[in-house]
Length: 265
Image 1 (tube, rainbow, N blue to C red):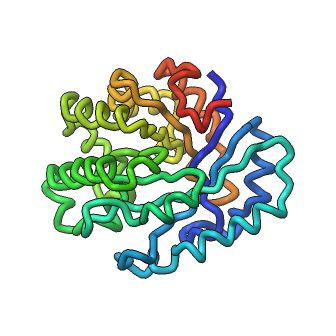
Image 2 (cartoon, rainbow, N blue to C red):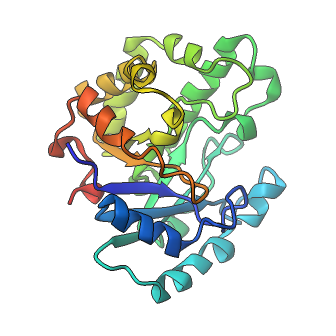
C-alpha cells in the first residue's frame, strides 16, 4: 500500500535538528513525495515538571508553540498539516512529562519508551536485561499514564536510541508473550505503534527484510494495534529513504484499516 503520511517530523525548533529543517522545506518535500498529511512533532517537556536535563528545559511549550505561528504563514498546497509534539517518558513520576491541560493543545502526541540515552541511568546498559527491563517499564507506564488518552502513538518502540551496543539484540530478549501483553493494552487504549523509518534509513532491502523489529510489529498487528509511519526527520536529508515505508508496509501486509485514524487519507 502507498503510505501518504509522515507523523514524525522535527523542525529546527528541536535543538537536535539542523537549521535546514524548516516547515517550508518539509511541505515542498511532502508534495514531491505525494504525502497528504504531515505532522510536526518537535521534542517537548512540560514546564509543569522539573526537566531532567538542559535539553528538555529549553523545549517547553513557549518554545515549540512558535511553530504554530510559522505554520499559519506557509503555503500548504493540498497537504494537511498537524501540529503535535514528541513528549517524553518521565521515570521520576512514572508517566509522561506533559499535563492533561497542555496535552489538549496539540493535534497529536508521540511518546517514546526508547530514549534510553537520555532517560535511563547509564548503569542499566549492562547487563542487557536491565536495558530491556527499563524499556518495558517505560512502555507500561506510558500507556497507563493519566495522559494516555491523548497519546497518538508510541514513537520508535524498543529501538534504543544511541545505544552503545547492538540494539537489535534487545528485541530478541523480549518474549512474544511480553509483547502481546503490552500490545493488547496498547490496542485497548487506541494508541498506535509507530513504524519509524529512521531506524532503517541506511539499510538495504535485504537488511530491512530481516529487521528484528518485524516480529514485534507482526505481534502488534495480531493484537489489533494500528500503525503510523514517521520519518523522524531532523534535516533536509532525512526523507531520502521514505520509499522504505511502502516496502515495510508490504512486508507486514498492512491494509488501510491497519493505519491509525489520524493518518488515514
